[in-house]
Length: 460
Image (cartoon, rainbow, N blue to C red):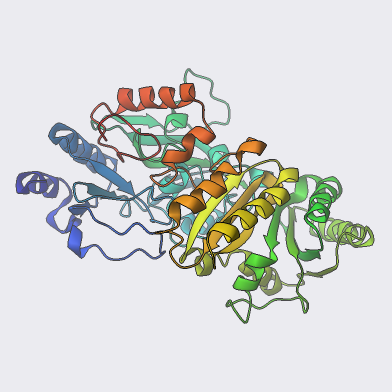
């Protein structure tokens, strides 16, 4: 990139908002994607994003959009030829409409800020993930984030009513729909949800909010076998109905590393167990919901599926239980991390299979499994010396190829990025991948937006 182009960009955003690559600091999460680009540009609004992209398009300059950089699949990885485009200054909550129950925000608003803004108006932002303090909504939507409440509220796609995005040539596509029902032609927002900044840069969003729950019950239950956890999930669905909003599973391999003495969290259970489940319900009638949750747990315990358990009696205890499950940064920062989807009933056999494969071929490797069992999503973290370097190929091969008998998906919520791109044919047909290439070449003919991510394009 020449000095002339950098000067043009500085004229758009201001000289202080063009940061040389060697001055870009480390990310708050260790996600194995340090900044290698020539510079980081920080526009303040959609108009500046549009002018930056138009300028880069004319120059053929590759651009990597960046949010909170909590992505775990190298979705924001840069090369020395790239320009980073940070959305951090687009950080304004524009409106919370308590009547329509919508929120309009800029893409750089963090998930936590959105949650707090909704709460201040007596409403509820239904998406929650462990990186809430750092991740930004534009990045959440561009990767179609999931989290711990998908079983009730769906992926973040299900909360997006409208959005604004800028194409590679600077064209602004403003589909800021605010209505639940709007069938006026193509729903263009879906071109940008989950496509990881390869088709356009999201700059503004309209979210559908939910009624703020008045009850919140959480229990941590221990089980002997995976089959017992599956039966427990079925009971939770039947007994709690629509109030069930979370059902998480943690293998002892994860639980031991998250709790003392190995990890920072305190375990509320005295004994160790093979598996643990977190059951969470939310509702709008506290007295009735509390009683229903207690009755459901009593029936689960009487079934013989539960060997031990604890029910949160306060906000502090509830947060303490969830802190164990959310203690992912402690584990993922030094691990090779995967998120996959497959049928709930197949998850136990799949985890046992990859544990056996990896332990045989990678001595000293440690597999920690946990995840959103209620919505088919399991996370696998592989820890050990050289698992991301010397043993990278064999670890990925075992994790992904073990999905083939189950017709599983290589990504549940993290996206594809650069890291999973070679394995995409396991989950997508050749015709699907070719259609993705067609969309990419149509909307970004110069291949300047997040090049190399998700799909390979000739010459990238």
